[in-house]
Image (tube, rainbow, N blue to C red):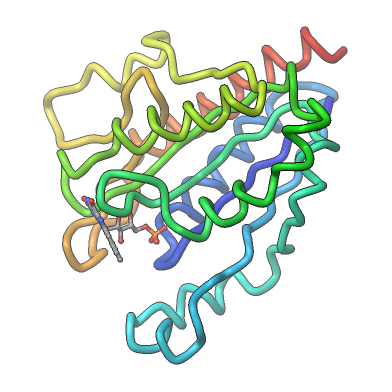
Length: 203
Ligand SMILES: Cc1cc2nc3c(=O)[nH]c(=O)nc-3n(C[C@H](O)[C@H](O)[C@H](O)COP(=O)(O)O)c2cc1C
């Protein structure tokens, strides 16, 4: 059973969550898992102006995914930052390259799951994940979320991401807040949950 953790991250929050998702997948015996990034679409000078270079350098060693690699995985767990309540353009561009896979039905019956981040608490995490699910359904994925079995999403004693749709983190307006222990636990749970289902479907 092969799982791909595929993400885009500009400032490293989604990358941090992706590493926790990966840990969760690895808790399932026999799970093969890889972490990859989607290609950057912004020019280097724009990334410099956006203050993203330190985070980009920290991710240099993560391989860039090609769209055909989607067909090699049994489960894909997608990580995307929120952009105006929706997935980022880098991920959109990547998925828009999946027309051939859609036409051939190559992704039908695979498991897809999504986690996200946003600057503000109500800045569109749920809309990002749910609108991402629309694309996954068009491609034939079986969508998996973050069930309430992950009780950490019920917490009201601290600010936290996480919903039945998927794990998430709140970054703050300047990206000053990194994922909390509870949000990382949600990401690990989602990884393990997807891998548990995938291991039953693709033994
Ligand atoms: C163009 C743009 C649009 C954004 N739109 C939103 C938004 O709608 N809601 C929100 O809370 N944060 C928004 N953000 C903040 C990002 O979601 C935040 O920088 C991201 O989650 C950080 O994740 P990363 O460190 O993995 O890149 C936006 C950021 C950019 C650059």
